[in-house]
Image (cartoon, rainbow, N blue to C red; front, top):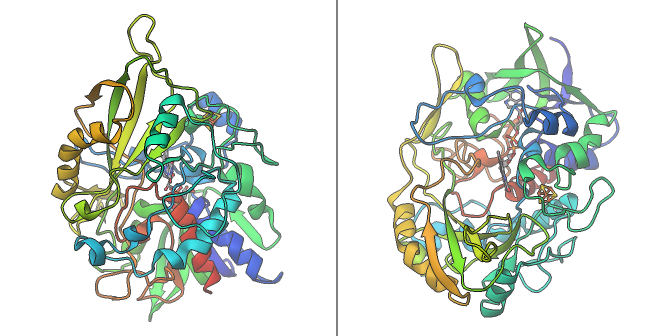
Length: 471
Ligand SMILES: Cc1cc2nc3c(=O)[nH]c(=O)nc-3n(C[C@H](O)[C@H](O)[C@H](O)COP(=O)(O)OP(=O)(O)OC[C@H]3O[C@@H](n4cnc5c(N)ncnc54)[C@H](O)[C@@H]3O)c2cc1C
Ligand code: SF4
């Protein structure tokens, strides 16, 4: 036994840092917290120079036998906060009650109102910029930062669709914060050259300097030691040796690929541990415009279209969120270079139990088992080829060119330890504590019972803040 801690967290990205922030705020100076992080700390400059965010490729950490589908996970201090694009919509109230409202999927065991104060807090921590003239979801507070500037096509769409078209909320700074300059619309946000988007490194690294917190880097957690409904210890590898530490409370924050793999290696057997692997599906299109220039916005993605998102169509086909891009693409026609508008249509999918993470019996790495997105999603993709034209009919559209294939990944791994009130069909309770082991929390996107079109990270952060507030 190396030592005994009040709290052990596995991972150092969004799920972990937002939980830690609230935990340190609530509890006194004598608490001892250990954070075990597999990766090392890479500076922003090192990431820019090497054009990488991690020392590991995906194949080093997991197996993905699918011929076309990809998943993204980076092992590094701060996790995917280093490379995310920083789009921060909330989920809609109806996303939490998909089954009651539309008879598909399942309801979440919590509602929008349960999460609203934590959404507001997470937006404050990230200094999110968002619309000041309405919002697709109810809000108790204004956005902390003013909205980004629309492009001209966005402006036309907002005028025609005041209730379903909005400035995209984002943690790409509209105005400088203490630690970040204002975003200048370079549109390479996975490697933001000026460090303008929120990352754990630029805004929350101070958490890991708190005297109550010990950060152990290059420490790969392999499994938990479980007995009689509690976790007794955490086993990890560091410097070629295996170690064991004990903690009163353990938070797995290693993402929806790694959380279930740690649980499976610990001997937890439940169909939904690993089951329900899912993420959104997207396809892209280019809208050719007649005599209207695009790309005047102040960040990489500026408009959010909710015209195809919510409504009774969700009984039959998936919701779709439309992202309007300000990332410059040239139209290959002399004098009309900017008369083009790239959009991405992001669809919800219905998680299936048979899409899952299991463990390779040879090397112990997680392995993804995935077939194809649901018919529910495919119906929306097919139908929206017509409906997109109607949704953007306020624009002078010449033609719309769709990409043939859906994208290989949305880089949002979800499901795999879903939350619910029934221990036979869910892994964690609404406070993200395991039903079976009451001192283990499983935080992050693994808890999502469904996958709404909204990018998930703001919800992940709000859930972590809420879980820590419930201790
Ligand atoms: C290119 C890209 C763009 C994205 N853009 C957006 C966006 O615009 N909006 C949005 O909402 N989401 C976006 N995402 C998704 C977003 O990054 C994830 O939702 C988010 O990072 C999940 O946070 P997390 O803390 O749960 O996990 P992660 O960020 O994946 O972090 C997991 C942490 O655990 C550590 N770890 C893993 N295994 C172990 C182990 N065995 N032992 C110890 N430590 C371990 C990792 O090193 C890492 O620090 C994007 C993702 C990518 C890749
Ligand atoms: S648009 Fe440019 S400045 Fe803004 S966050 Fe993206 S890369 Fe950084």
